[in-house]
Image 1 (cartoon, helix red, strand yellow):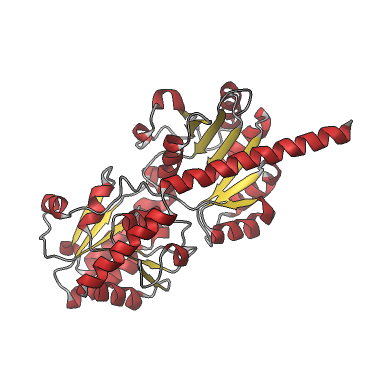
Image 2 (image 1 turned 135 degrees about the horizontal axis):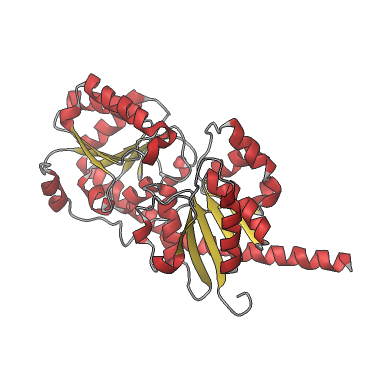
Length: 394
């Protein structure tokens, strides 16, 4: 406790649209011990479709929108929020929030300023690299959701390796669990006997849908009744060129003549009902941190086939909870999907082990405990540094 009150934490993120980082922020805000932590969420965009999932949102959700691309008053308004809440810890997610929070945290005199790394081995823009390097002294710790991401961030932005903590994402194992697929399949018009592959991913280049679409076309040649379930949509405002990317994937689907085998569901708030409709899920990403969709699928008892990127080799136990393929190995992905679709007993056993693994290592409870530990240890270390400095000054 600080001054006999709960520790005030402000989680700052670019927006609250449908995405893995956004869902993780809400999981932390909703599940941290309220007797020890008073957690608020601040978004730098007024586009907040997930905002209604935050409990006590009227008190805990704050919107500090940018008036234009170069609105530097965001930093001043964010610092004012930190002061008004008497924030002890500010923890940011995604680029715009990272930079604004670093500057605002120092301006407000916040005790502990924490950044995040949610991916690995991507190509950041030059101006992003410069911004991170120029504000490097303003952040105390960076929480990465993969070891690969921590190493990448340190190399790319020059933050010392001891400043990183790895906290894997967590999944709500009460919400995501094995259940009968019958009701949702009926609702979607999918026959009980039809094999279903699911991809749960926003339409952005990182997700590399083309690899899965090409592999799916091969699967159809030998298992023609297979259905591809696509859950996710474009990001708001064509962020990251997602509208263009979506158009390219639509064109590829038509070129491959597979549209009649695809079901597009867009963004959904009931994804926990959709995983059980799938026999397998697939993720063909170019890069990742800890993909929430893998954890959600495994917790739902559905095995996964994914690219061997970031820490996926730790998240997925090869041949036990799912399968890994090399990036852009279309033939390899098609082969793994075919093999699992043809072997129902093995698929069910994989799903059972996947659920056990997710519950053991990647539960929300584990995420919250690890995050709280980082917060408490970080504050303890800052206090020690401050006391040491005061002694030297005397």
